[in-house]
Each structure stands twice: as structure tokens, then as C-alpha cells.
Image (tube, rainbow, N blue to C red; front, side, top):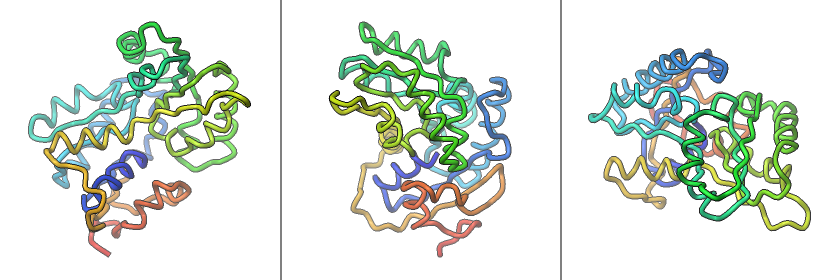
Length: 255
């Protein structure tokens, strides 16, 4: 969520943003697909009450299990933009490629479909990262370091690119790079989804990037249906601090 919201903020500093999430229900990964879809719909309904121009599903797991439900509910009145691992651009650069993702996404037919469609002939290794998204969510640096180290051990040493198949991973991209980069090898390329998702959202509503626009956009935060402030853990990341710098009070009024 933070990575996608920050990407929108960088493209359009004048855009009002509504961040809606479900910390009470975390983690989603072990839940049944129907439960994830129901929770994603509740999160989206809370955001939709603020009448946004578009809805970004800034979670690979939610996109995997809930995108058809969300599109059936909100489109065509409100475009719904899903988030999928950036297999296509990673494979375009050649291989080998590793895809880091949550256990709910790793090994899924949807991920395998993306690999088959966009990475034909390219060596791709799926790397499940249990516990990493939760550690990032709560800014638990020690737990994140352990999860990153474990995933790095499962990543082939000859990879040239890593797909960050969870938006949380983009918040610690440089830590992941440092853990996987091999001495004497070309610089590792990391592929996230936040920038592409933000750009697609603007295209869907007929807007253009305007990074030099006045920083007048307001931020509204909804946590499990409740108006709230940006969680303290978010401020551990550059993206959270960017958003907090233009944050409003919990009820969405300008400072």
C-alpha cells in the first residue's frame, strides 16, 4: 500500500489519496481465498465511501483472490487497477530471474500463468518469503533481516533480476539487493510494481503525470474501517515519510 501510494504521490503531488487497509485481519496470506476476497471488498468499500476516481488494489494477494469480485462491484463507474508481479519487464531483460513473493502467491496458477506468458525461455525461480511481508508491515527490522536472509539462501546465485512480488518488499528493496548481490557480478536489477500501477491508474482516469504540481493533495487513512492516522511503523520507510509529510488529521481534513 505504501509503495503504490507514494508512487502516485510522486506523479501527482496534488492528488488526494485514501489509504484503506485491514491491519485487524493481518496476515491475509494463510486465509482462505473467499475470506481474502471478502476482506478486500470491505477494505475497498471503506475507500469507495470517499468517492475516489480509481481504486488501486495495492496487494498481490488481494489481486490474486479478489480482483474479479472488486471489478464486478465497482466497474465501470470506478476503475479498479490490480497489482501483479513485474514478470514481463524482468524477463525482457533476460535471465535468470527470481520472483520473491508471499507463500499465497508463490506457486499459484496465476503466477505460473504470468511466467508462462511473459518469460518463455527465461529461467525463473519462484522464491516464497514466509514472514517477510508481516515483518515489513510492522517495521520489525530483526524479523525482516531473518526473512530476507532465508529467501536469499533460496535464490540462485546467478540471478540477474529479482521481481518483488509483494508491494511490501519494495519498501526494503535495497536491503534485498544487498542480501542477494554477489561479489563480482553485474548489479542486480529489482523490479517492483508500484510505479507501473500508479501510472496505469492515471491513464485509466484520463490524467497525466504532473510531478511538479503543487503539493496540495490530502491524505485520508482508514484502518479496518476506522479513520486513523498513518501507523507509526509506516514512518520507518521513505515512502511513509513522504506521505506523512502531506498527511491530514485522522478525519481527512487539511492540516
